[in-house]
Image (tube, helix red, strand yellow):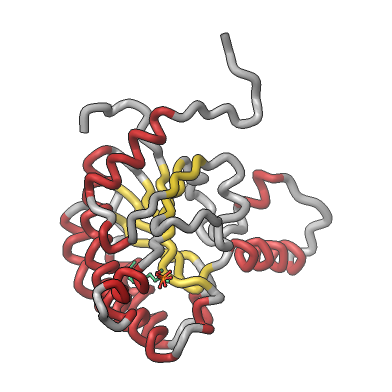
Length: 233
Ligand code: FPP
């Protein structure tokens, strides 16, 4: 990495294109998810090396339950396998694993694995790895609003609202990467992405390697972020 300035604090990733990656090889879609899961560690490792403090990935949306049962089951079992296998790696690298989404609604065995993974790594302070699971941006906002209503609050500020998110202390993403040529937000962190820089690439997620990640970082470094203000001269 030549350019170590302007490293984003939080990189969010929509890991898209697993199904197409498999289809192009004449394989069932689930092979694509397996290859996609294998890619995650390389990106996590690279993000840590360059100083990214939060990496969040969209693993499963509240809408993904509508996929064929076999595919849903495979993604879920991949996640359980992945969490169980990666906890020693996360501990060794001082990476805290966290989940965001409607975790309560997950099948019991998945919920258990999720909670164990979080518990095991809760003392890690080097970096945060956030897996969005049974997540959608609209659901997060609605869940927050319902908690606020339950507390009987009459009005609320933007900063207070944030306290009701799944991970209140998580900073907003600086950079969103979406692979596979789709250029949509797809109900990812709707509130948090108000000023996020978007990076889209044709590369399919299972092919998104360290070099591809660097390309996204270089592109981010060339962007001028204004947050709605005028440019200073
Ligand atoms: C999008 O590809 C990918 C998903 C919906 C699932 C992503 C899940 C994993 C990579 C599993 C493991 C996750 C972790 C955190 C280890 P797609 O199926 O929409 O692809 P397509 O658009 O080509 O059909």
